[in-house]
Length: 265
Image 1: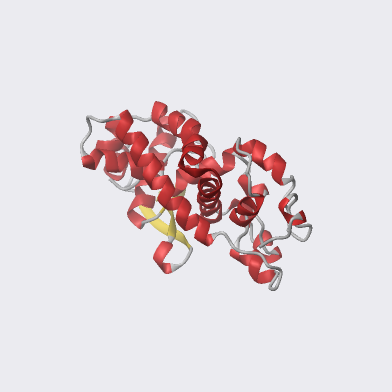
Image 2: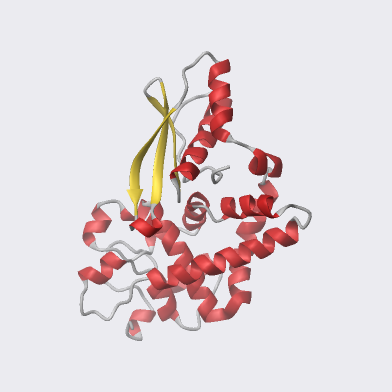
């Protein structure tokens, strides 16, 4: 485990982190009793590999725990908010809320990428902006909060962002929408060809991949999104593409990091 001094500030040999753990705790709105848990949640495997023998532990076990805690807490919150919905409808809402796209948005809202401990090679490769790294780190932080403060602390950490997502949720659109079909119909009405979906990246190990999909029309990429399955990523990209077509200005291609995206319907 990291030394006592290492618990108070991020290691000097880390590439890029700007602020102390205290400042990050301010962004999390949570103060750790055991800061070594937060340090571990921020530690990517690449950093551990680069500093072999440095007594650092990577965050993958905490990410596993955080994923389970996230699923439980979101399920509980969604059930209490919509007790009248069917199991299938509740499952779609839960899948949307815990999707890679939303986890990235949550990670970005607390500037988590600035604090993750990465190897120099991963830093140069743009690791601080990689969706899979951000999403996994957010789940790891949630797992750390759960271990440090219990389920009540983890629930409090998620309370505000979950409430905001649920307040903005279009239930009918989410539970019944098929965005790929809607996009194809919209393009047909506009006299344009059918969209083409292409997987442009696969991130993570085989048992836990994140797929990045681009949707193109007339060889022009109009949206890009990520998902835990190809179908989820395609539906998310189609959703973003529909948003683009609905806007009067058709400038920059939207990214799944700054839009909501559904899971596969």
